[in-house]
Length: 208
Image (cartoon, rainbow, N blue to C red; front, top):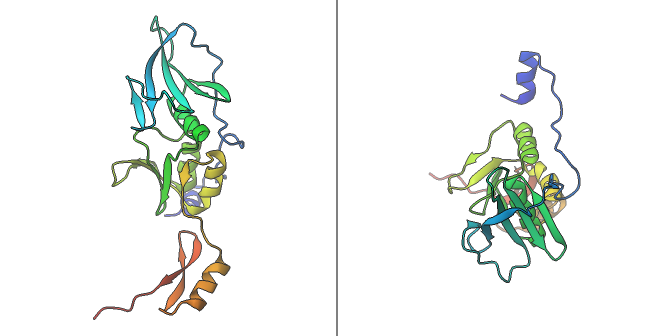
């Protein structure tokens, strides 16, 4: 059942889902200093998760989890680069921001899902909430043992603007390009509607 049909039957008001922030990587930072904190774990770009023995000596972007010495406050996540440092209380926002700063892929768009390619991390809460309401579905484990978010191809431009350089996706061709591909195809290609866009694909004859 589609969301608009469900809303009509239950007499609910239907509104367009909104995502917090419009600027790229506009995650909520914290002014809390980590002066009286001690480093507890370090992001490993080689392994794609936090480790206790750091291996980021020559990395241009570093992510460190700082823990309160007195164990009385939240952990603080600090992303350091040539552009300075950014501090976060949200673990997920810090991981995503580090990937944006480094220009490292963290997600891939595959067959209607946004799949996490790193071994740890998730979308920041405002973005994941927006996707959940947009697609009327919750995130969960994928068949590849990675976390995945239901997402439509029409969500990609907004996601890529909010999370630049960290989402791998094939660039969709235009309907005009697909039509040209069909005209030039010698093997019976046809125009098909796939993932919210027109593509040229070969239609195989029925077997038997």
